[in-house]
Image 1 (cartoon, rainbow, N blue to C red):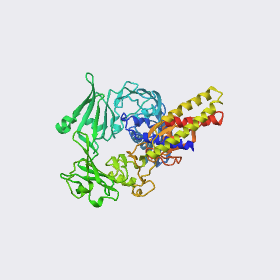
Image 2 (image 1 turned 180 degrees about the horizontal axis):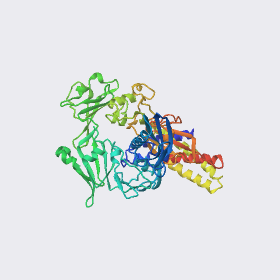
Image 3 (image 1 turned 90 degrees about the vertical axis):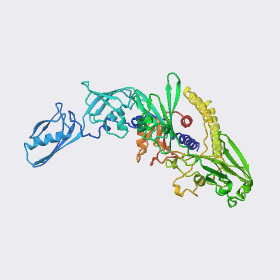
Image 4 (image 1 turned 120 degrees about the horizontal axis):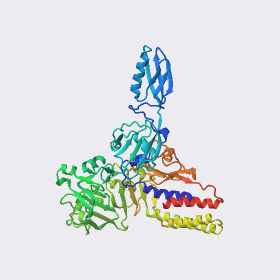
Length: 607
């Protein structure tokens, strides 16, 4: 039971970390998610592939003769065909080889058709050097692409170039490759690798970053300089919610230090904006439009129809609240308007609610006013909803209000909302969770103290001391108080078990849909792997370098994005966190093994 509690706590912490917005170097994740072997490289045979010694082919002929013959091209580039003789195929593409064979057969036979198939491309050795993770000699098939060769070398280091990669032949011929057109949807460059070719990846000359309201925020490589228009093209353009009134450029100035350059597109010609030159180290930020509706008035509290109302000049309280909107428990004698002043400060305007709705006196409203209607006998209770919701912010609870009602009041979800990843935290749940952790720490501390008196070897003593230290760290770890909520299917959510009655202090966060699956625990290379539709758990574990020797293959579980933990490994969803358990092998004594198991899970929680 305690072990399961640890897993749930661990799942809640990790699920909060899945939705990270840290900028990455464009294109490098492509290689981190490719773990290729020689047998997997070059499966696709390009049209321009040139035959050579070592290629295994099959020749089929039908018509006046019927034959099918498999053979390997010899060192001189020849094959030997019965009744035809020696034929030279080296250096010919498959199409040219087919035409060449057809001509040779036509001289001996009439009405014969020829087909040639490449069964297995030849293996060659190439050298990969420079800014790659695994430089050295790599065995590839002659049909391999430059992407596959770089993937076999572990991918490109963070400082390496993707734009000026050189392929150098034995005769000194050099071909320069820019991978950006490929990564942005273009065609692969045509390269016929030859034995002892050198693939050289130098350092990149510079980088610029773009973040905010663009479709592909990232760090992009440049060759000296780049225009703002080209950077926007790399980033896939602006999002519909981009605030185009201002573009901010952060620049490192040798004399002045860090400086800010503001560009106001509406004040200059478009050509001037597009041609603005960026240099190495620049960071471009495009702000999002304010999600708040400016010309509106909020009504909150103990009233029948709380929510947002359109503001217009001369709007009064009685225009949006009537006597029939008041509840039996509504405090009619007093209400408040929270108003933002031009200098950014706030003022509170108190008024008689019943007089205002009866139009006794003039209570005129201003844009962004918040009308707070209080209860006679209940304190004001608030909840907060953030993320991919149309009107995020703090809301005053209506007595007995449920989560479905709050989401409707907040305008519903944006198109980017990932309902399976909702994060719902509650104060009371956080308090109970903290009590469970404290109880766990007390029990395990007592176990460690007891075993400390029995420990004989230095190894046992060291394990126990490490356990004490980790339990102290666990005591300082954050407690989330997360409550599992199932928003999907949304059309059936209202009134379901997950449609909780809200409590004061509840916080709801609706994340963007993630595009990764994380793998942690006893794997050789814990990693965030790009989600692949239909891929099973073996795919993700292989991408993380497979199991370590201490892996407990019978104890693999998945932390779902909604915070639950499951050992059902059949379906993998975006945002899932796969954890491979630890098995304490070759350790004497059950207690010591249990301590090792405990240390493992505590360490994962803290990390």
